[in-house]
Image (cartoon, rainbow, N blue to C red):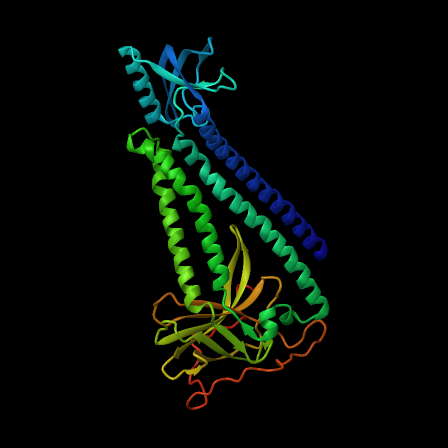
Length: 432
């Protein structure tokens, strides 16, 4: 039954992801098509022939709607081409693409009205291949482009990431299944970093997420803000328009700040490593490892190391992380060792014998080592997943030590001199 549930969930996720990815790509492609149509028409109309026209009807339609004020120039004009008289109604290239650009519509109306009242000639541009097509103003207006650009940029990017992530996920799944068949009952060997006893922090994934959401949001938010900003400046914006102008750029700036912080953090500490001495770490045993930090990074005087057992608890908003056990240390860096330009910090934690082992690859129970500055400074925040398992597994596979365990760097006195702070137990854990 559990296998069927997992297959059903995987199939449902694949179908939903494929549908969402194709939908975003389709709408993004449509937006690119509309932008291409506007640009193509603006280029084609440059070759149209000017002809004198006589205005027969000129009005400015003004409509008040919930979204704001809509203005449209209605102009009928008669022109002649090759001795044949035609009646034209098209004012500009974008009149059917955007319903509300009052400033431009009003300027066009005032210009045509002034020429009509003063008896000045009005010229239209006629398509020599189809003289029934004519236009009074052939300039490309920015508002239709601004309307479609966010969708042309953000939607294909989002859809491509969804489909690319699905392809990468399928490849990872096939590779994981192959490793699982090769090492049954040994989940600590199913991850490449656990198998090599060298664990990297999660800064790379955090950087990808931060940059992705920043690009997608700002690609949609800023063109929409410029589009609505014209109505706000002339006082014709609805409350929704004010919300767009204020809220969208603010969220975009916050996401940009988050992406910049993630970039700086990854550049400074992305090459950090947690070198485990024994894989896996046994409940009731000791986590012994080396924390390798880049020597060029701006590090605080003290580090706070906290080993946590985190579980997912169902809630009204979905699964919520709950910390069932934790143990913390404060490590001074004054007497830490150096190796090949890297700062080496010894890590040693005693694990509870009655703790809950990791449920990898399921995220129900996971262990992690958090590394932060003892005093908040310089954005140091690293997270290392730790393979913590019990002494016995379904296949009764004994714990093994890595073939070439990295030696722990020596410190004066031989011991770390650290004591666990705020130790909890798993007996009263909410994730039990």
